[in-house]
Image (cartoon, rainbow, N blue to C red):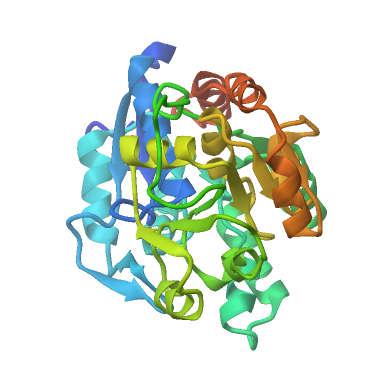
Length: 354
């Protein structure tokens, strides 16, 4: 895109579609363990498998400070100059800004300054999260910021059709679908997988924070053992309040897959997630799901008999025990990452395209 300097017109042929250089800018990155990070990691892996070159601009290696109330999320301070050098050195064909943090805003500013097309994605319901922590900040104030941030993008990518309709109803433009997939080789049924706790095992995986509504799960009167995997600002308070629950901390890779496979029901109490990648991960391991009938689970499951969605979460949990594990696995196999990556590629703004 910029072999000699930002903002130069593209006067050379575009690379072949299987040889794009894609820059992904994200404020969310390891060691965070969440759906956004896993989505971006899987996207990069699949893009490379298709022959593309991928570079991530992340908080890693930069001066950062913790995000208030989210200490595990680090925000880069004054990253623009170094980020501009990364733009020049990598010379991407396409730029995707994945988050609305300090890196995302710096990348947006660079693109606008040099008239570089870019795409964005909407992963997180910031208005709900902000309201849960700072009730004095109005919802529309947050949406105004989000509209300002995403408006210049050639496409704002969202995970589901219902979220697309919702954002369009809030006057967001150029909204396109970029669905989510699951690594069905890693997340799979595992013979002999077990956790050393009385069964049935009811599992939650994700950030341990107020907006995830985890306490609605922990309050349930269920037999067996409740298990929580993940970390976050609410963890220590919930550990003290619910000593019978097993808090195992963060897990990734094979250890996470084994926990899914060893559990009897995956419980998803969130009412605010835009998708819920963990739902697909659990299903891929053969573990049925219990959740509220809200946007994320409704979009992921889409009426398939692999989950029970009910406003009575305890009822949903008990009913989910009867779902055949093979049905859950077969459903997940229909949601490959390759199809999602192709969607992402079609949505990209490639420098020099007309």
